[in-house]
Image 1: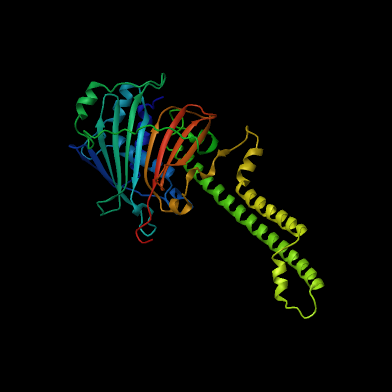
Image 2: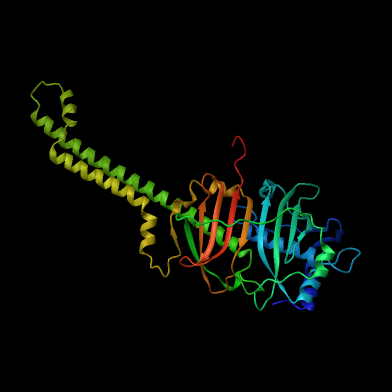
Length: 403
């Protein structure tokens, strides 16, 4: 499904309102445009005070669209004639792979991120794909706070099959990219047996004009699965600690009761004038009935502690499979904690493998990459071991040295 030219024109007018200083400057070799963008709004930030991955991906679409569809200074056409390409071929575009790199400044609350300087570059033109790069900068700072690459393919909207780029387009922009000779691909990976998963139904708001799940919506599925697992881990740990406290109190009460019985019996059998030190000696040798009482108390303590560890699994097992919203192993994220997440994402890689749409139920599996604390893997799949739809790697910033 493609949009007619009038729709592009209306879209272009809206995008141009987001450009500050009303200037979009074009560089031809390599091909890129620069402009001042309005910046990150308050609604883009999550409860940790960070711009969420989902919202950053949406922002990247807006910034990229300004570069693709808005007229550049001194030229009637846009940076890479994208409107002409889609209208002449009758095609639409699907995202194949994408990645994001965020600096620590992206998560620095003391740095105002509005406005921002933007640079949208042609990366590379292939036979059926176009790679683009988007960079966002704090004004006056040459170090990007976000760098985003995206490879899109032309697709027939009816058959959903890839289409080749026309020769006129390849000849016009061949060799003008900033990523020439630098392959951009993301390798697939295998999902291990031990994962945590969250089950979700794709809703209308998750989809886009291609009538399939939007490329940014997968990041929200991954983020929600990670935070659900961390929430359940914290809940299970609190349950375990509460159970241990209760068992310690029960065991202490049982031992005190046993000691009182021993004291009573010792006083009944202690000859007049004998030193009371022998009483404490007798307390270390309780009777058979006392041993049985302490053993039962010990079993109760172990059972209570184990019940805290098994609490989440027990809750999961009693929920009917048809309505179970999550499952798997909450230890799949290893030692990752909320402290790691609060430091913010450093790098994200996404590979889109199959389509899914409104009404589809998917399982988002997450796990920690072995040996790497702050790096997680995610696989979005059809329910019950269906086909793999999307794979994501998320890496969080490491602690600063000395912290």
